[in-house]
Length: 89
Image (tube, rainbow, N blue to C red):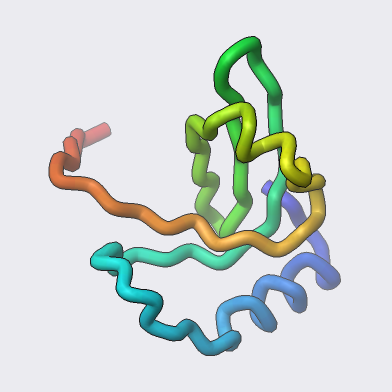
């Protein structure tokens, strides 16, 4: 988790940005900051810190390279799933 007053202020600003309907059926959007992009041979893994949540996604390597998202830039994790598993601790 990224801690401190500056990231918290930045996160508050991201939450108040207007979202427009771009035709997507995805309803869950988490505004945050790119923390890491790891390039593999075929794919890439991207990480976004959105408040107390961390979103990790598999990305195409082509997308991750053109231009490569850098840690610290704002990003939006858009979650769409037809299957969610909930477990008790």
